Length: 140
Image (cartoon, rainbow, N blue to C red):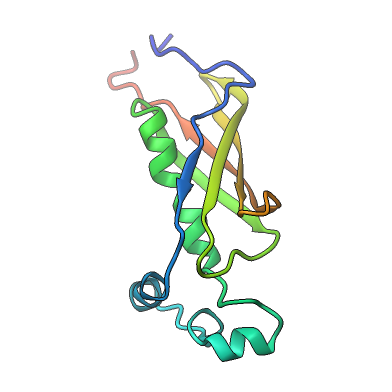
């Protein structure tokens, strides 16, 4: 036994609200990520393809789960984070991140379902994360 308390199946993490994202935030993310797709930066282009404003980079939203997960359990390591992008969040919108424990064992780690929802409360990202226990040193 590691001595760590595993979370209970069904446990919900505290919700986290991020955003709203303005043009400067999207430009800054485009610069550091290398994702300078004009759909995220050009309002006229975004409107021309049917958005009310430029969409926020999906990876910016997915990455926001990492600090949420690490703040929840500093004694676990984030081993995997993935998500499916269901619908976009546009510039000016805030997003609510939620997570719930689906499985937890010392051998396999803690598997969580992640959900990001825009202001319409519709899912934006449906994802999952695997958090693992620290490796024991010296076989103990």
